[in-house]
Length: 263
Image 1: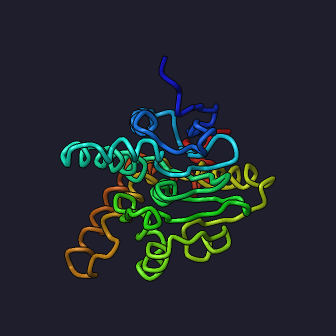
Image 2: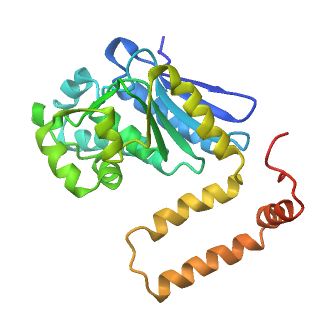
């Protein structure tokens, strides 16, 4: 009988909570968990009733990254099989990073190796002050290859040059300073902080949030030239004329809540 390595719930406000469920090994992900995360993210991304996706861990850890038993197995694979396995990990991260809904990493405990990739792939990260972090791959003869695009985008090249090479452990305060996480709170405040962030997200237009995520991916690191400015003008013109854009402006002028905000 297969295990539910991912537990999902959706509340009445459309907040989906995705809980990594392998607490005995600190929610390290194996082949089954990777597949279940991909499937779950696909289902939630296509669910019109879902407004926000929250990723967290069962027990006292967020995620210890890849299960070492899985790593031992894949080390015996052929080069082609090994690459296919790595691609499945890449697909898991991509399913989070490119989700059309806002994603929040609720970091309830340690996040090691690939666990940092999960955090960096999310739009927003809130961490408990007792959480700790490490990009420890080099200490076992590996590199954080598949997670590197997401982590480097989050913390920058200079910080990556330190933490990719030392594999050292760092605390939540450091994670906040290097911009891996946005907020650090006491453990008892984690859920309240999540509720505050969710409340901010729910007053915003859902389609606009999807477009805003795509805008960031399009504009980031591009030269500011005529091509880019024309692209941004095209995007805002389209949204101004959209039903959601018209509703938002009308609601503001009429001093009422827009139709996407529940009473």
